[in-house]
Length: 211
Image 1: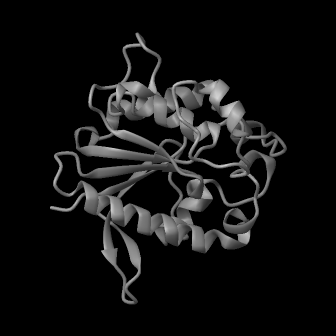
Image 2 (image 1 turned 135 degrees about the vertical axis):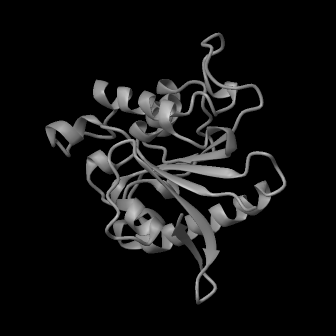
């Protein structure tokens, strides 16, 4: 049986409450932290997840580390914290999952800032300027970016097919999720999720089909 993809929306961030969209890469509120921790208690497929792919903005990274501390490998947490699992799921920080708009609140931080904030994570794969909203990361290129992400997910579902943990969690943003899922009406609550299968569309392209 092929694995599933679970799309997760980040939990509540500061700009979601004060509506100050000029904030650069805002963090979670206290409520948002609690929402993410609560997700850990209700997410039903923890034992089936082999890979977590996350937008590199601070609020999505925080959501991931709080919600999936019982799923991710222990190397992604401070030594002695008691978080993480020996031989747990791999974490990939994918700039393709960043939010669509070029507003400061939807713009990522410099990798050096992220390294200081999350010292147990490796940001070397992001590349210089990943947070600049140009080229593939411009608002106008969002369809191309989503297509690339779907193909990446399909490739990794295939790579995981012979393992015990075959599912992938994707932690991303509300607007980009509409494009990625192909469902313009999707509007998950903060720290909400929906599960999908990977299928081939009529034109041979990769599509996500809600399960």
